[in-house]
Image (cartoon, rainbow, N blue to C red):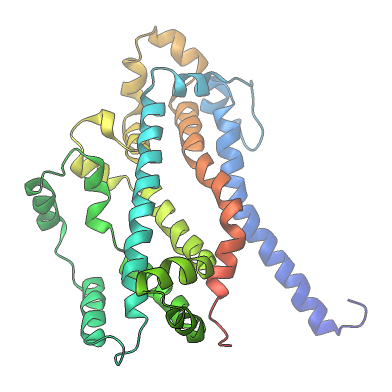
Length: 295
């Protein structure tokens, strides 16, 4: 800083100020949500809670876990994220690898690519998609939340560009050694694509975890709701849940209310993604910058 000019110092200070403001705008809502979930109902109703719990209590979390509905919805989302992300990555790999070839190596490559791009611009719509799901017998199953969007063309194109930026000599050397296309993909390309797979995988994880609309459309039984759909139903009518909780309503309201109960369950719903993201961050950053400079 001593050797830099005044304009550079001003630029650095402004950058730090902007970054701090952005970080606070991301962190403070979660801190407020946590403080609200750990506060008593009276303090929450009076608006006394800001970023520190008032009348500390864990009753909202006990209520969230009690009865098994939250944990059942959480398990449904875990299954959805695990199975859905696996299907997404497999289909993206099997599509992006051949489309990364030139039109001389893959006959009709441009036509096939144009078909995939067309699906990004024109969709069948919600009603035709719903009818397809119903007629194929997928309704009320986890596959109804996975198969309609099993291949994200946007993420596939990202992965395809990563593959195209890798040295083609690696594939040629493997073929000289007698490897087939599937062996080249699995043994050569996949290890090199870990950063990019982590990038598109994180997109898939977040997409499946936050998918609440699919549960409302395709699930008739609330026991099959993923967590996002369950939380959306709570936000819509939490008072009814309190009244049908099977305990004395007056005593229940004395320990928690809709504000603290919603805050606890929303924080629990966001916690798994916040725990997973730090482990994928280094791959995510590398994956976004991979291929920006051709070597």
